[in-house]
Amino acid sequence: MLKSTCPELVVELAQVSKSFNLGKPNEIEILHNIHLQLSRGEFCAVMGPSGSGKSTLLNIIGLLDRPTQGTLNLNGEETTLLDDHALTRLRGHAIGFVFQHHHLLSAFTALENVIIPMMGSHGFCTEEMTERALSLLDSVDLCSFSHQPSGSLSGGQQQRVAVARALAMNPALLLADEPTGNLDTKSADAVFKLLRRVSREQGTTVLFVTHNPELAERCDKTIQVVDGCVV
Image 1 (cartoon, one colour):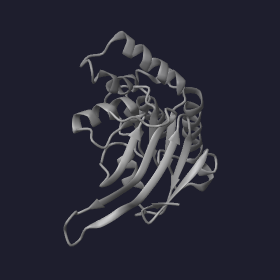
Image 2 (tube, one colour; image 1 turned 60 degrees about the horizontal axis):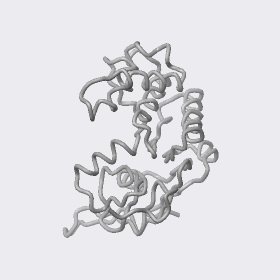
Image 3 (cartoon, helix red, strand yellow; image 1 turned 180 degrees about the horizontal axis):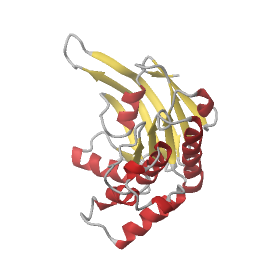
Image 4 (cartoon, one colour; image 1 turned 90 degrees about the horizontal axis):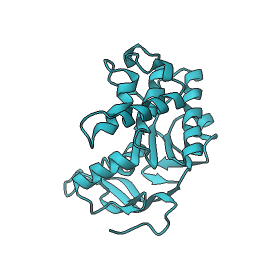
């Protein structure tokens, strides 16, 4: 298996392009020759207008889609030739996802929502999983709400549970797609500070998609995506 030339690079895209409707009259290239590197613990904002290719770029980095051309190294592993099973396994262990909508299971408690990602390899909950989930909820200041149904929590609290869930497998990379878009200013700031703290304390690389220039200015760097190109 090919390895990244730099072990501190968590994400490394080289000459990545993505086209849809290949071979058809309406074939269109969405991403054009993308080069991108993210180091361990780096906190990076992604900005760009609607239709610029941000979602396509995030889907490729998140192993939800494959590039038409180019290579993607994730956490030191070259992913281009991996089969679907290997991609699923790598995605589950190396990447955490936080979306604009939290996507929690509302009938399940906050604790159960955080435990679920850890049950994939066992099929059942262990004491170690429960202890880790409680520790993660404590890190987002929600330990006292651990046994409450997630549907009874506020929007900001639910998003913090979503962050804890995304960290359940201790991923090297956290992809946050407009995680503050549905929140009020105070809750949005709290979620942003939480992600920032996670990046600093745990060395997690964070790719943060936002339309908020004030939040982007607080990141280590900002990637602008315009017409399918990183500028």
